[in-house]
Image 1 (tube, rainbow, N blue to C red):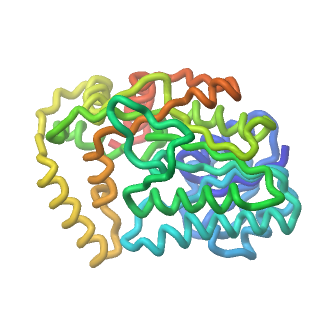
Image 2: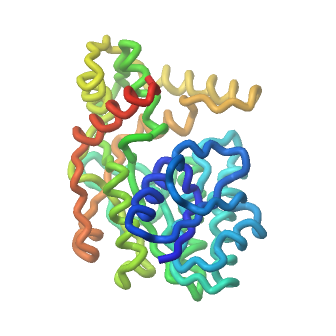
Length: 323
C-alpha cells in the first residue's frame, strides 16, 4: 500500500510510520520545514517538506498515495483562529488535494474533545452530538464535518481519548512532576478518564484504512479500562521509584494559574504545559468513551491496559533522558 501520513513525525504519526514501514508499505511523510524529525530517525519514509495549510505542498505529498492518514494538527495556540486554520481548513486542503489526484481513502485522526466531557456514569458513544467546550475541540469537530461531507472520498475517523505510550509528550508534564517528588491532586475528584496506548490506536488506524465497514463512520478508541489523573501519576511514581508528596490544588487555583500561563504565552510566544485548555480538561467531570462500536463492526480489541501503558511511558522517558 502507498500511503501519506501527515504529522508523521509526531507521537502517533511516528508509531504508525514505524509499523507500516515494518510491514512493507510505502510511506510518505508530510513534515513541516524545521520541525523535529527525531521520532522518524531510522524509519525508511519518504519525507516531503510542507504544511497542511499550504495547498501546493499537500498536493505534492498526496500524489500517488492510495490512503492518507491525516494526523497533523495544532493542540496549543493563543487564538481560536489558529486552531481552525490548521485543524479544520488544513483538513479541507487535504481533502481537496486527494480529490484532485484521485487518492481514495482518508483516515482522519479526530478527538474525544470534539464531543466534549462525559458524565462519570456514562461514557460517550458515537451517536452523541458534538459538544466541544474549547477551541481545540471545536476545530476537531469542524474537521470531521469537512472530511465526512466531502463527496468522492472514502472517509473514516478515529477518535482517541488520552493517548499514552513511549514517546508521548502531552502527558510528560505529569511524569516530570512526579520525578520532582510532586503528585498533583485537584479538588473535587476523582474524575474518570478513558486512555489508550499508542500501539492500540495504530491497530485501529490500520483497520480503518482497509475495512469497507469503516467508510463514512467515526469510531471512539478507548483502552480496555479507565484511569484517573491521580492514578497515572501514582503508577508513574511506582515505575520511577519515587514517593511523591501530594500537592492539592483547588479548581479556582488551577484556573488562575492557567490564566497566568496563557498570559505569559501571549507575551513571549512560548507555549507552557499549563494553559486554560488543559485546566478545563482536568476539571471536567469525566472524559470517557465506549469502544463497543469499533469492537462490534471492526473486531478492534485494545490489548494494553492503562497500568501497562503508563509503565511503558515512564520507562521510555527514563531510558531517553526526558525526566
